[in-house]
Image (cartoon, rainbow, N blue to C red):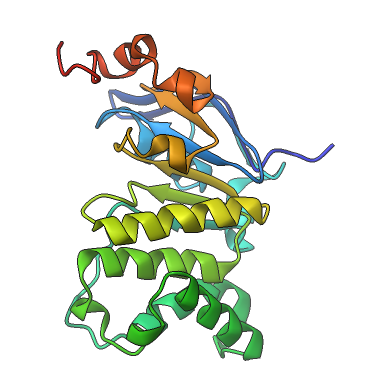
Length: 245
């Protein structure tokens, strides 16, 4: 039996006196896009960090393809696109340079790009529609273009598990549509995709299933059921379809 791409079971993560996740369980399958929905402070970013082995669990387990997340990350099997990138916009690095960073884990200590690395970078740039801007300094791109560049970096990595934290925040409609289409293509290619988003209206076109998070997974199933008012009330504490508490 093939192990799930990501399996979280009974996870508890605390930051001092603050419990970020408590008895959290979630399974993400290969070949699917799973939407992660929750209000700010619900634990989404902590869940992503746990999936990468970047935070210590107080209880529970996290496995990536049946093994430790740190091992999968070291083998470049996990790609992560954070909500915001801390970059110096004046630093002389091109879009192509940024995307090439996704290949570093496969280049060895010399970080010399081989033909396969260059081909992966070219393919990723084409898929996000940034070929014409490949040599432009990264700080000269719009917000949506920069986000597409960072998604291209994740694509070039050729990871089997992709984690995206609010990839649509602050991007234009063209970039959002491009990213949605790409994530669907990557899932069709057999990748597992976990993506957090506040855009509930775009969720049906984006995801195969959805998980509602409020320190634990309250619901995981079809997108239609996830968006049912009763479930949204549990996750957000209000009826977001009507905007009333």
